[in-house]
Image (cartoon, rainbow, N blue to C red; front, side):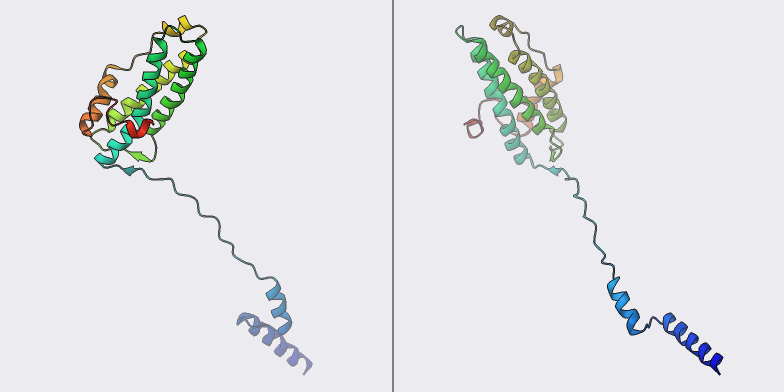
Length: 186
């Protein structure tokens, strides 16, 4: 009879474990070992370029190019001033490097999608800005006023030379590179 009770008790324990039931002592042990599922951080999505309207592209282009045009004028003024010091010339060179690099970054910004009508020309202007940054760097590092004044500026490609005016034409902006710049150069 003892064997029958042992078998019945073993069968009951097996049945309870198969059905998910447990004794009160087992419940406490299970509660203590509960695993909390912690969600992993969600990766930040890469920004998708936002297509600009022609009007937005015009404002963006002016905001970018006007600042560059002002420093170009400053360099012309300091290089043609017979009383300019090397330090003044170098300061404009350093400013030019900074502003043309910023302009290049804006022209090729990953979050900006130029309208199809000007996209290829915007890439050419980007290249031109990098050429200008190189020229400004040479002026910033000139060892004498004469070296700065006689420096031969690197040239944009033939196609890039007219890209800014093609952009202005396509975006219905004035061809005068100083027109429309007041808001961006003060």
